[in-house]
Amino acid sequence: MFSEEIDFQEKYRDYTFKGMRREEGIILMLRRHWLAVLFEFLPVFFFFLGIIFLHFFILGQNAFFFINISPNLSGLIETFLILILWLAIFVVWVDYYLDVWIITDQRIVNIEQYGFFRRHVSELEHGKVQDVTTEVQGIFPTLLNFGYVYIQTAGEKERFVFKQIPNPARVRKIIMQLQKHAILEEKKKEGEILRGKA
Image (cartoon, rainbow, N blue to C red; front, top):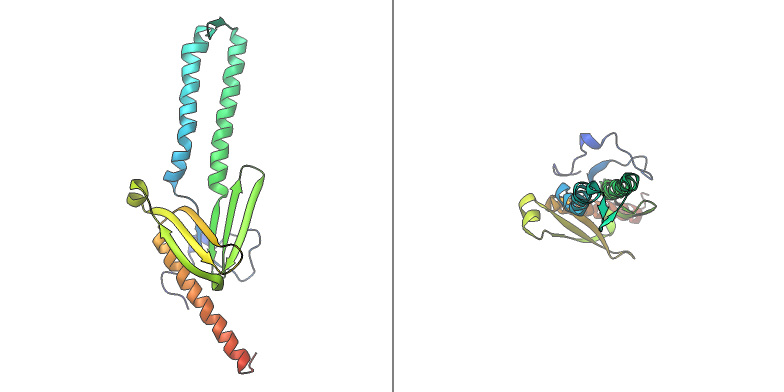
């Protein structure tokens, strides 16, 4: 039925997701590469360094823009900045963890989280896939083998985009094999209908 490349992986056997069909099995569950997320944490890291600088060199001297401030106010400012720091870390982590691309034996499910309160879920049957393209661009993506996978569809939504995922060439190969299998199954069903077996 499937080649060795497309096999149900044991690590996904206990996974489920909202809207999963009864007889559906997960082949791949993908998130962005860890290095792409690390780059998103860089501004947060520099903000953290700014808080340290503020604590030791400005608020620690009890002077803020040459104005003396009380220790209570400096503590309030630091607490507020640390709260913003934790919120930024949480936003980056939620965006990474809840952006998931799931390839099952029946379809592709694209789940993208935007902020805390907005989620976009779309799905694509394997038979509607027209073309799959990969793109690996840059030094780090080339060395660590991660990039984009673009799926051209026959439906209203022109392209599905898997962003910064590990091993995009392997993912492309799996999707194309699933697409060929879905088309063969569809032709087989059409043949049975024409022969009056269904």
